[in-house]
Image (cartoon, rainbow, N blue to C red; front, side, top):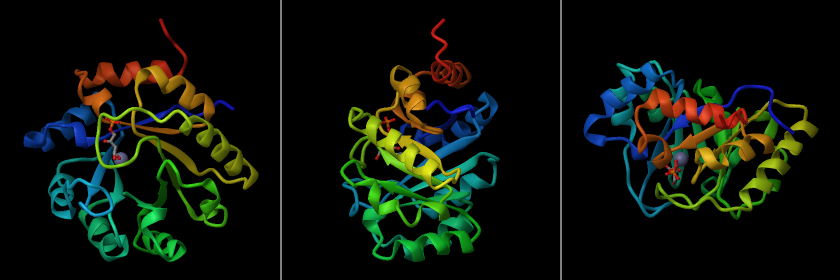
Amino acid sequence: MQNSKPVIMSPSLLSADFTRLGEELDKLEKAGVSWVHWDIMDGAFVPNITFGPPVIKACRKNSGLFFDVHLMIEKPDKYLKDFVEAGADLLCVHAEACVHLERTVSRIAELGAKPAVSLNPHTPLSVLEYILPQLHMVLIMSVNPGFGGQKFIPFSMQKISRLKSMIREHKTDVLIQVDGGVTPDNTYELVQNGADVLVSGSAFFGFPPYDQRLKTFEHAAAGDVS
Ligand code: DX5
Ligand code: ZN
């Protein structure tokens, strides 16, 4: 089931130095990273609070990275426009936070961003059955969202592989993103099971320089252990 495309790394800014966000983004870009993951938390959907559209807008001015925005917030519809205007390239909403998921996903596309849906670890894939062709990406949460540095939940591996089969059955090319507890040690298995985009916070920012760390993940994804 291996992917033919090279894996995309999306480092999670949750583990970056918040006093130097602009510099961190610049360093990522110079290291050869193309995506960056923004964890938006509202203290209601998840027990933690991070940043909102003004921070993204300020950082957008000096960054050419693809802004992958993970909305861990209740009632995301109220803020979709704000995030797109701030510079989000992709907006990922949680299925658990959306009463009318099809409407939310269509709205993201109308606003000009790439629509994505995230599932908490316990949420079955069946919630995606009809919406899958409208999505650019599905995010499989491999920890319960809210914090960085948690342990990968093992059953996520099977969930990724089942989602890959579902995507093939639908004959679409929706990307699979995995977020939570991703390290170079589980990268190869994740990619073998169908992951296209890997989010990494603590296991990325904790190991500078970033160009070397990116290579470590890319080699791991390719099964190159030398
Ligand atoms: C967790 C966030 C993740 C987090 C991952 O709720 O969605 O993006 O930053 O952190 P690590 O890679 O440290 O598990
Ligand atoms: Zn995330």
